[in-house]
Length: 316
Ligand code: HEM
Ligand SMILES: CC(C)=CCC/C(C)=C/CC/C(C)=C/COP(=O)(O)OP(=O)(O)O
Image (cartoon, rainbow, N blue to C red; front, side):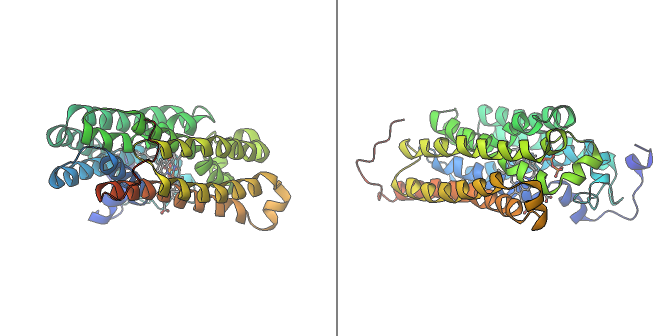
């Protein structure tokens, strides 16, 4: 890293440049899952506290994105997907990203402690630490298991939302955590298959780089198989119900069909159609998780409106 990357920019920074440091597109789903965790909890939260808490989680998530861009600016500069980011393109300095990331991290955690409670604030602080230090600074460059372990960071937001409402952790919030935790590897490895050149050039030990396409396809299929039963568990908990179950069965049928297609292909077939099935699997993975959490939200709405079937067997 040169000194210039710490202090000099190509032009005057604009608001949009700082916003880009917060990875707003990925964080939309993070914020949505946190909001669902909050709204699905069996404790009513005052709307002002709810909105303020979700904003704190959004700011904290953005802060961890800025810290990731500060640490990874050398990697981002050599990958075609990321070279247009604010630091590699010279619109912001590494110092800007570090300062913004640290300031927003502290601000979001303190504000969440004030608006909600210490459990939620502690979980937010741990999540920021996990994404920026455990995943970005340590695992990402060290092991192809980087996203399996590091992916836990992205699984915490619904648990934080739940803690805002209840002040604690429960079987239902752990179930939401587990769903995102097991979803993350197939989500990311599908992308890594069609971004393999980027990661090879950057020297990041993602699974397709270290172990090849075949092993990655096997992993995507295996994780999808494990994910399916885990997504059924919430159906029989306080956050689930028949609407959730019906929706999740349909989603899982599509997930397994797409995962099967990705698994059965080899390098030659995939190259022949420019990895279309892998791109489709990645795109669907995002819709899949968004709909699962929308179904949990729908169940919460039905229960609040008194429309939930009285004898649905909620086991926990
Ligand atoms: C370690 C875990 C994860 C890794 C390595 C990862 C990696 C990625 C990458 C590299 C992209 C492409 C981003 C881009 O085009 O700039 C992406 C897209 C995306 N990811 Fe993930 N992801 C992870 C976890 C998550 C989690 C937990 C969520 C949400 C709950 C999530 C939601 C999304 C969304 C919504 C997009 C699409 C962004 C767009 O609109 O282009 N990801 N992910
Ligand atoms: C509340 C809170 C703190 C939430 C954090 C949520 C979180 C950890 C999301 C992780 C998702 C993500 C963008 C991974 C990107 O990996 P990468 O950094 O390797 O991707 P890149 O190559 O696009 O930088």
